[in-house]
Length: 244
Image 1 (cartoon, helix red, strand yellow):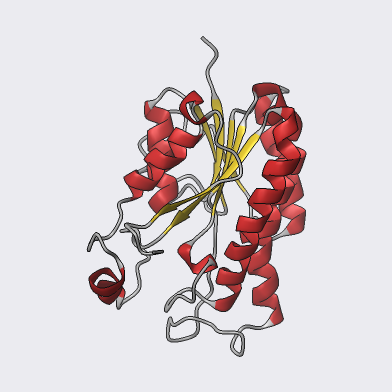
Image 2 (cartoon, helix red, strand yellow; image 1 turned 180 degrees about the horizontal axis):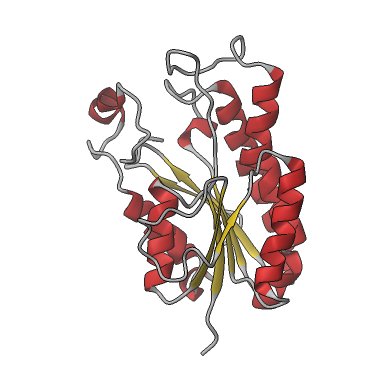
């Protein structure tokens, strides 16, 4: 049988790490993208060989990184592209940056990573996606639809724009057999949780618990399978009811 191939950005921790493990367990070849070098503690086979290191915030390294990815594919098929990388700069005390506290360089960096890179990756890897009847998954955020106490203004605006971009891509790519959907996580138990998250769990989440990275990964995986073959242009909320 043909081995399916997935490219995943932001694979070094949290949701990305769990997602790589899920696809690897299902027998997919996983090509990871991160600004960091491959971490030796990552437990999947061929991880270092199939890791591409470049910075999504830098247009020059992004262009070179895309060419490196294409060389790894060797003109073959790409069954899934998962745009999981995201950044949210903080102030000197580690708090959120509002509009008044965010400078131009931070706006550019956040939008380069969280929005523009997703469009450029899909554009330049479209032939490989089309050949496979592939899937694009964009990771948005609950912060894209409501003011969040920890996520900054630039991050929230970029994720709201990414939800819109998902619809645009779904409408444009669908005729070629390429589906595009989004996953919108809420409060997920990762290493980057902010102090005060317990209050959100107690007051804002009907299920009264944090989500697990594996629960997000399972939803991502489902959208990349034939079981979701007629799901296109959707944004799936994985937040225990926090959005209601």
